[in-house]
Length: 232
Image (cartoon, rainbow, N blue to C red):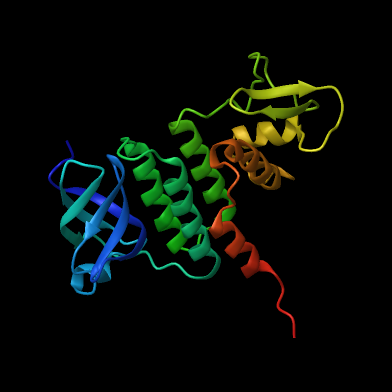
């Protein structure tokens, strides 16, 4: 049974019937979907991403009703690349987080990450840390400093990711491989190490792909469009 009231963030909202909205919320008790009635009024103005909320729902089925929705803090104002990064986090959670499966650590890390994005902190380390935490919380994590046999990663070694298993040492370079130095830097979150951030992005894409299925992430495509140079 869900608590009477709990902190929440809106992950996604869309129009539902005449004046309602169908809203996906992230809470410490997991992701849940609820109908927000009178969405064109005051409550509807709160049904936007990145606003800390206090949520109360009613109903026992998968689709609940919003009984109360109040602001619980200062909205995190995201713009430009930070906005697309926040939307990417929201899409990841909608796609990967099972409905009503409690993950309070994911909620806490999400709140911290969104606040850091609003403060203008560097995007890539924030995104990589969130992806890693989400994979680990869902049971898909793996060691970065040991291979799948438990042998410590060596700086001069080459490795590839075996989905849902871990890092496998390889004898020669191949597409998608990782240097041991890159993996050890990731394990220490040392983003000053040459190539560490770029390698972390590749690694997280490989790790997330089996769980996202064949459908591309809309937010990622929008982000790439934003980064494309404009033409006169």
